[in-house]
Length: 291
Image 1 (cartoon, rainbow, N blue to C red):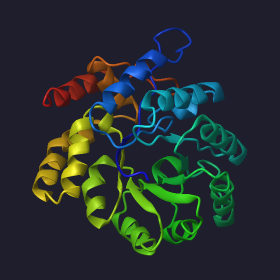
Image 2 (image 1 turned 180 degrees about the vertical axis):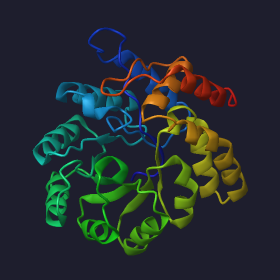
Image 3 (image 1 turned 90 degrees about the vertical axis):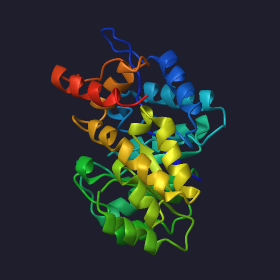
């Protein structure tokens, strides 16, 4: 259901005192991505600054995305929270709005025990919308171990995981343990897209695809066609961009990159702050190497 290159899109804000949503800019950005051959789209993830969106803004971003996409590709809406009740509210609304699935980050800060994690994800999977779990220990402070992921994969409502642990052995173990299930393992790290595809991964939820969507989509397409040489060439061609997207906390660099390209972006909301001049110059040099 969710395979290929799915950009985790930024949320454009207006440069006014309240940093209101720039919904016209969001529409324009999505239309550009659709024209570049992407395979799905992810609004309201961490790249979309979901942590600083109000419930109303969260709903507006998802509704706008669904409206612009108009069924052309799947919309996987970020609806996670470290408060299960909030995640349930966001997930139910995404379902009502027409999202094709939801991306649920593992609860951050709380560090729930195993039974708490099981109950959290099961409560969301019971809402009857496909759930993709999101494991990113660098943000949550807690890894989702393979045995827990494999157990949760048995739930018919849980269809995949975005794996951003950076542990290829863990990725391999999850794929090995879920081969007989309708379950997809998706890279959460652009730089590991090709290695994870080689292990049997389904694609990538991508930061870099905000900037180079056509090249990212081509990397996936070449791999699927069996042209590994071209896929590898694109991997190394894009590697400087992969690194540049993390010269500061995501989504600070990607938002600046999108702005430098002349697309809708605007500022990041506090507690994030703008990319400094030195890093902006570094980012500009990398962008200049692409068309």
